[in-house]
Image 1 (tube, rainbow, N blue to C red):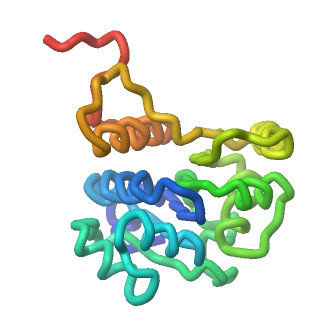
Image 2 (tube, one colour):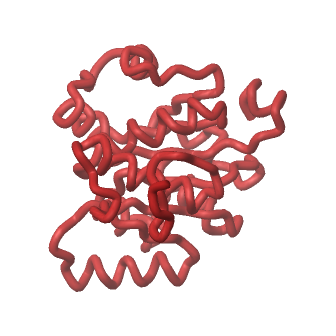
Length: 207
């Protein structure tokens, strides 16, 4: 557990970024978690780094921590793990994580989780999260869905995961892309029972 987690008693959230469109959601989630001083274990796949490059301009090479710091995502309680490090803490069920969020979640990763594959740290951490009966959120970004993908979503749901598609709403009258990102990040935080003020919930009229 991180030094910050030990001092605050907060359990860390494992965040994985894989090779699907939606890197902005990942940055928004990291910004919220780090801003709230919630410990984070970050795992980024090779294709996840490529999507960060394509969609946010963060280089695929170099120190990811430094690149995140340039986006004002800075925290002493942020630990970054190599995707092929199966000896890292999130690979063990004894590691007391709060939950895991794969954001965005590629259909390749969905398939691996549905099959119980453990070839990478992302897959192993997801399998551990399920076997320990902790919350696993898959922020899937794909359209349309094939029958195979639908069956995989069914399989992970039966295993205990929550499929949370990257489908922002419009009832909060978004004015820009950031508002759409905030909506989805808010829905993730809701699932993690983390308070936020990113948007006004449905039914709560402006005073």
